[in-house]
Amino acid sequence: MSASAAVDAGRFHVVLLEPEIAANAGAIGRTCVAVGAALWLVRPLGFHLDDRMVRRAGLDYWDHLDLRVVDTLDEVVAALGPDRLWWFSTRAARVYTVAEYRPGDALVFGPESRGLPWRRIEAAGPRALRIPMRPEARSLNLANAAAVGLYEAVRQAGAGPA
Image 1 (cartoon, rainbow, N blue to C red):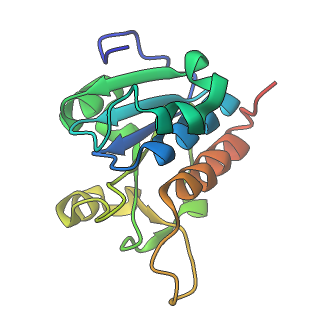
Image 2 (cartoon, one colour):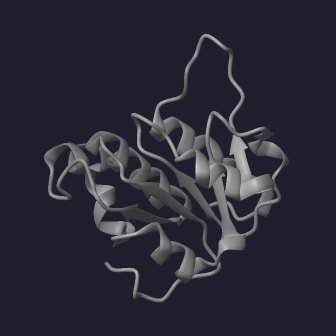
């Protein structure tokens, strides 16, 4: 599906900027299906969407996924609005649980090997969030981080799955 498809403001969105690992995208897609969220993949992708690792991680859930693949992050911003994006980074100051999520919001995650660009985090101001962890852990696996953030958003909004 493309970004031109109607955006459902009643659901959450997960945005993966230049994802590199097929299995992470598959697992995140499966989590999105579980809570009714849409998944946006921003090119370039480090894998092909027909990659067996994507399918394997998503199992039979992939057919139920609201998937949008776009060329630039600006397309996501244009579709959802800049005030609906929450930027997740280990370098952000605010903890993800202090954000006030609403259906229609998007959780944005950077590539596995480098995360979001610093300029994006800086520009996001209070919309830049981190998941706290011990200093000896550099970061969480992308699929785990997306699940942590998405389930907190769903919990806060009372928009849990049926």
